[in-house]
Length: 377
Image (tube, rainbow, N blue to C red):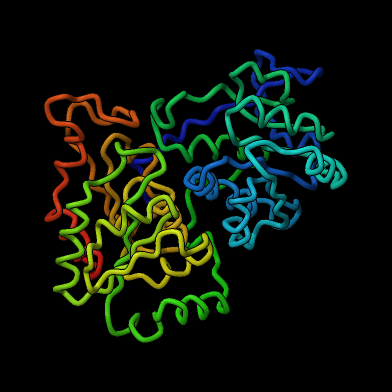
């Protein structure tokens, strides 16, 4: 896969001393060759999009180990359905809230993992695994948590990607400390939707009758980050109007919080249906696999669509596509040219033309990108 615009392939070595605290010298020896690891647990990020960005690194680790080492993930319970679609993960340990609770720590301890990778940058995520009896714990330093890790890499930038390169590179660095890997997202989809679920979704949303006769445009108008990631609602409306004229069926997906937004966008349009809050993560993945093309903001749905193999168009305003863009070749990214972009702020501070970064990306540009993807140009 060619995603050179997202790549920064400079490797970072791990350093540690015999006490397990980080030291100043570098070590080129992989941790696995010194420790003989057989089972590794990965503390995943707490957000859908971040989990999907780290997934290519974990998949390449799985391929490199070739079943010699089992991989488990510890994740928020709301994200368990996502990781259940990653068939190459051997075990999923969900926990409630944003921290691993006492009972789950006991379960992790009893499982006898001999290695751990801490993906999040928080103190709490390192603290939780440090109390699970795991002898090798790998993560990034910073936030006064270095002493909780036996092996650490330098702290990452406060804003993902602001240090240069795509955020996936930070995860590649972590897993490559264990063994050499292929530092590229795989060509094949990372998520597998069962045939049973595909059948259920087709029937539930009447896709059996329409998916082969009408092109299916799936839209995700929301973004958990905030308004600075959300393309104007009237622009989404314009896309729906054009899609209806061209014979598309349009589905809007997202969370329950975005249901009202989606209803406002649809506004009694005959060709569009509001599914926000009505689909689980696996059901959304199934819909995306059935879709002709996806249109979305920089969001978790964007990364979910890319992980299922769905082509799409992504809109970037306050954030950076080279830093957090979709990790797939069949996507077209439309990015702002404003001098203030990317600002990485949740709300625009401009008084003259608020959210100019999003408003300058026109419906005409987006529709051209959609039709080109549909025609595979």
